[in-house]
Image 1 (cartoon, rainbow, N blue to C red):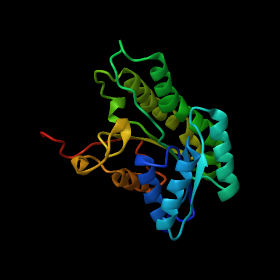
Image 2: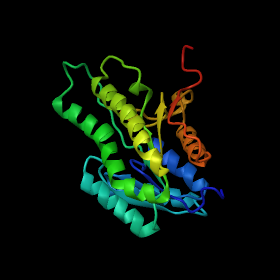
Image 3: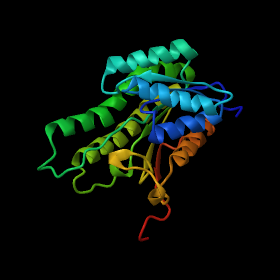
Image 4: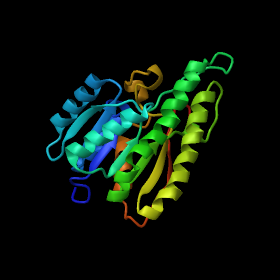
Length: 240
């Protein structure tokens, strides 16, 4: 715990799923955490649940929409006012609309790109000064869909291909300041994504605590070493 104790992390979309799993893992290491959600009650409820498990760190919930730059700026301001620093940012908020290009609506396309790609641009623009000061870490949650295309995935593929490239480029921009940047590209994860309800049928999938463990490993790594792009997939999916 000593390496990360009293560091401060901001996780977008942290009220459930992968973001929640990352928050829980960082808390266990003594990291103070702010989780954001578009829904204030969801953010506060998740923070309450996480605080009930934490003994040496604290969680706060913050209402913020990654699609709104001013909203993200305000969230970062709250984190800095409350904790006094910012060391780790996990750009996790994301969504997916899956349909043939014939059926995909303009609104679905725009929401996917605005959330999964532009939202991450806003995340780094609103936190880069604080991360330069702390020589911190910026982590994006992309997807194997950011390198593997599939039918009915045009919007999601575009957002995640873009996110993977965006993250790799800003990694080169920011490492001169001692800021580390990585993207994690998971395959199937047991979450509520796309209407799924996690249960025993998802036991073969990556679990949210696995992604949390991976983030902890990244931020604990020696500053001289940077795993900039990490693909992670289930060991044995059905039928394999």
